[in-house]
Amino acid sequence: MSSAIFNFQSLLTVILLLICTCAYIRSLAPSLLDRNKTGLLGIFWKCARIGERKSPYVAICCIVMAFSILFIQ
Image (cartoon, rainbow, N blue to C red; front, side):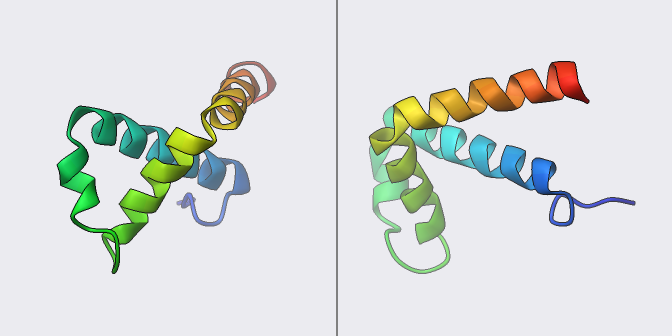
């Protein structure tokens, strides 16, 4: 049984999905992520900030990852 932690491409997919999901949740309900800026739940706030500030780069990575999953694997 292979885990996403041990497969680099799966790990990148999980990280990209986490960033995109957190940014989307923050756009719908900003107070949900803004109240947890530190600690373990602060990871989600940081992912949302990455998704907001680096959105062109995250979008390009999502497109490249989708192309890779659909046509290379």
